[in-house]
Image (tube, rainbow, N blue to C red):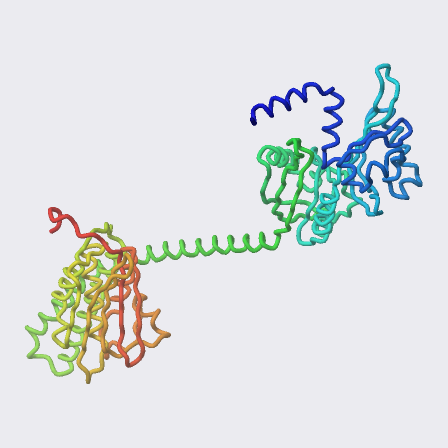
Length: 512
């Protein structure tokens, strides 16, 4: 049954004349007002879209002059007659403007008048197609009001060749031109001479046309010739068929940000230069200290040797003052020798190649404890999980731990017994080794100083040492890509810690 119905409808359609089909098509069009005028402009036909758009029924409107749809002002200047004349002469005339409905309300319409003639070219009348563009008009007005009110951005439009067609308040404020001074001029006016010679304006439009938009930053020129740093976005505008009809351009004055970024960049360069100069100076100083320290060991051994020989051979012939002098010489040579040794250790940590490998942490701690005799003067508690491995240097890491242990046992009150705890734990992808003591503690204002070379907080007589041990810890841990730190307060002891990247256990075949 559905198939027979379709065939019947086709047969019926095939019997219709072509003008009947066209008439039915026109009558059914609901979005367009389509009607016919005679040669004087009186309405001869009226479709469904005309009734819906204008409000008149066919009985109300057929026979009346089409000027009834125009505003009183347009009728006063005889605009309807002028448009008919243009259509009669040119064949077509298109207009956009206000039209009036039956109830007196207005709507924004696009209207096309086309000449209708017989086979001999004689004028029979006109065809009129009207479309209601009120919503689009309101959207454009809202957009224009929004754009024109923006003062922080220059927002304007260009035609397809780059000539300015609109200009908002922000554009006037940023660039200095009033609308009547710039509309109709080419937007390359805003570019520097160098950019115009390089063809940048053409590149901007070409890129926007091909890619849909162009975004960039650069210098632009105001009306008074001053320059400002701008961020620009250029967007290609195309109609429904994809034809390019212009561009929209948004410009923001970024001069303050540019100045700030330039200042930061300059500061960064200066800081980098100072750091580099300091590193070079430190490297030279370290090389000098290493060389001097190495050269001092021989005369120091000579001084210590001759002092000891003097003690053995001539002690009996010396009075008390002579023996005191000899003791001072021996003590000073011993201190000097310890200082030179620490300087050499610091220089060695700074200068040697330090390839990192997987090191079992408990082995490094055991190695350091075996080198230290300080634990005999107090208690030492160690809790290092045997499965912890770190990325470090196998000879340098025990030296770091030894310096932390020595520091922990040294700084305590004479009336107290040192208690040192060493433990380790995982923190994300790192391992933290902590050395905690019950010593005298360190005030917050001094906690940065103690990591520097030769920085001492106490007299040598109270707490002997060279003041280099923690500087070695800092330099070594840094070179092993680790971190270091301290929590302490006067009278509450100190907690020193280092963090190194966790490592997998090495293969048994390669593990010593």
